[in-house]
Image 1 (cartoon, rainbow, N blue to C red):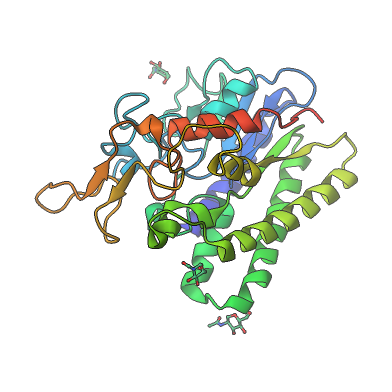
Image 2: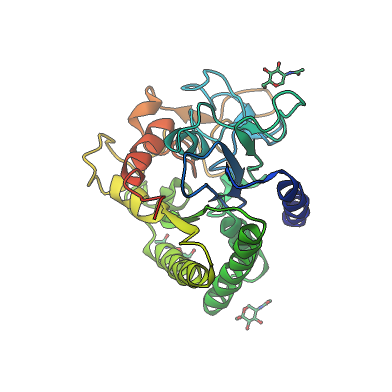
Length: 318
Ligand SMILES: *[C@@H]1O[C@H](CO)[C@@H](O)[C@H](O)[C@H]1NC(C)=O
Ligand SMILES: *[C@@H]1O[C@H](CO)[C@@H](O)[C@H](O)[C@H]1NC(C)=O
Ligand SMILES: *[C@@H]1O[C@H](CO)[C@@H](O)[C@H](O)[C@H]1NC(C)=O
């Protein structure tokens, strides 16, 4: 999976190189978004994972199964949520009329009107803290391969170093604005808080995320200082925005923000799981918009709305 994605990444780099001419917005794998700095960008390219995928995965994935998509578009359509996801909110906030089409939906006439979404949800998303990003995938691989506590920091350092190399490459292709997310607090994901009946975030995991985000901040500061143009790299802070909503500082209405709307009836099952007879092995809350988290990993549309209202204050122009 990971190797496949890297290959895809190389292909996309060539593709972008041929398509970009300065007025576009690009988004990069691991939820890196790229936008034009001066004027209203006309296009958005997204390279990410299930937090930003709007329908690239194949139809065997949970995002294409009921109850995904029940809030928007009203049926499963490849988004890992009850409804709209980060890409939809981001596209709207930079003034695009539409979310860019997915790579999967591309055709000659619709190609690149608003950019394109290459984000791809992983196959093992529901299973662990791996969730979504470039980093999420790399970290889940690490847990499987090694998982020793003292190995974490070297692993995180290697991931961020590689991310910085990729960011520099994208900027080198002529992209004017590159927005990369700080990791969300993985220790607060329902898949990790189920053990505490969704009462407590895992602070050990969050402290590793904080370390990742610190290195990312340092890398971005360095990249900006080396760039000839003014601060092309911007961090979209999913860590503070998620925590602010979860801790209810934003005055949001989620009763228990750590409790997901849709969850497997036991740890063997996930949202959307059915057994061999087609019997449901999950429960769904009555009103998805009353929950922050949709499944073990992903926010609901209401969750993303709340996160985005905190993020809106993020200055993408600086
Ligand atoms: C191309 O894609 C657009 C948007 O998904 C769709 O409206 C249109 O019908 C498609 N055209 C063809 C020729 O498939
Ligand atoms: C796991 O990581 C530790 C610390 O980096 C290292 O010493 C050890 O050899 C690794 N083990 C495996 C099986 O890779
Ligand atoms: C928190 O996460 C760490 C690392 O994954 C794990 O070893 C630990 O058991 C978790 N703590 C709780 C209370 O779940």
